[in-house]
Image (cartoon, rainbow, N blue to C red; front, top):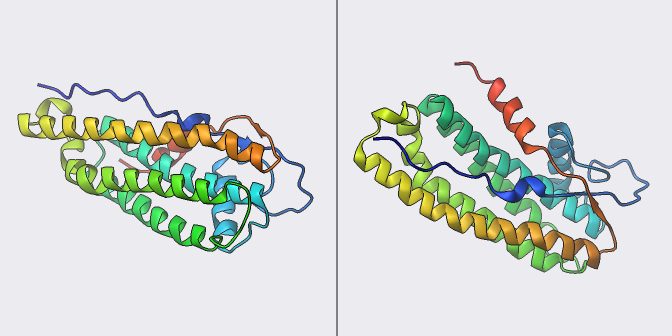
Amino acid sequence: MMKKLFFVLPIASVMLVSCGESTANDALDGALTESGDIDAAVVSFADGGATDGEQYFSGVLAEVVEVDVKLREVKELDEMDATEEEIKTVLDDAIQMIKDARTAMDLYSDKSWPKRSELHDITLEWFAVVEALMNDYLYDLAEPMSRPDDTWTDEEIAFYEQYSEAYEGFYEVDERWVNFQHEYAAANGFELSGTIDEESMVNEEVSNMSH
């Protein structure tokens, strides 16, 4: 008996990058199209570098992408039958990223940029759903995921199916987050353009692992 669930990855991959006309050279200005851009934006955002609504969006977007890549990475490692330790390391990294993102977002809680509080709240909801998937399911699934599917017990498969049901909640909040970015951009007077290639970021992370 094998796992019957094959995820269609969430639509976070269509998260867009802002393309406003910024004059500064801060990491929160310009497109976030590569992993280096994402990393730099996260660092700047955590240092309080966002000075307007557009830069705030870039910072939040970078934080969300960083965690989403880790979630996708777990799926890839499952398919590769990576070690339990490797899978749990990715989960540990993601949990710490979520913690750091919440702390960074709190730096801007007094800002009055249009719809900032709404973006703040839906992003916290997004983080909470991802965190719950990891704590409630993925840590326990790390060991089974390290083995071929045909070695899974009926109990492990049943638990994986429970995970798949819980994952539906992630699809729902992820879709709302993606849709809200257009509303936020319009309210703050900037445009969204292009997509973020999370798949290449996942491949980059996985390729750096030795098996």
